[in-house]
Image (cartoon, rainbow, N blue to C red; front, side):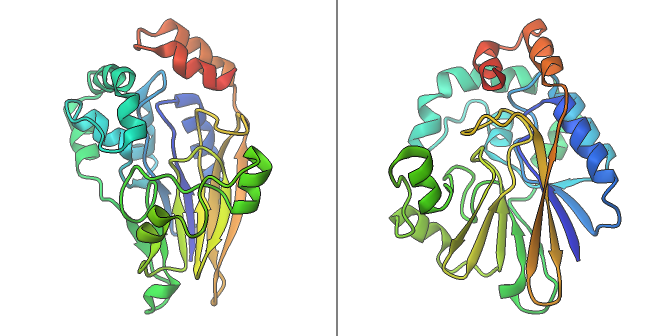
Length: 255
């Protein structure tokens, strides 16, 4: 079994096209999944949804899909609620650029997708947007990488929210996005693999798009990373020429 997962396109058609073109060269594979956040934050959300659907990619929903579908519903978590005054106008802008068919497709997405190479749930690959419980809580990199990045541990392995979120989950690997830093973390018996981002570079400011290949060898899932270079300046120019609210905030991710 061979599954390809990417995430966090954020309405960037240039990154989306580059990733889909690269994935096409990976055949054969059993499925391609986008782990949410497909539309909000880039120059052409409708084009991204169109490309993802035309390529036969399946998807799960992310937090920004919820913002688009329910722009009057304020996020529950403190971090995203603090940014809501900026995010809500962007969500409305995106919503007005998607047709009813696209909005209905987004509204029909599931929270998770599960791939089972055996009859044992403990062997599964589970694809979600952020974590197995909700679309908000971020899974940070391993403790040693947190120390290297920030000089402190911001999310320990025994963090109460992390323990509550991951305890009792039946899978071997959880593939997700949301936190814009590609990393892999071991937590008890679970392998946590962040495949993001395709757009809006995160902590290390790597502007390349990316995806991950999960291959079952009969005993475990192996992960292969792919980074895809594309013309970031095209997205910067397209954002500058758009009338998206707070576009300057999103352009800063690329500079």
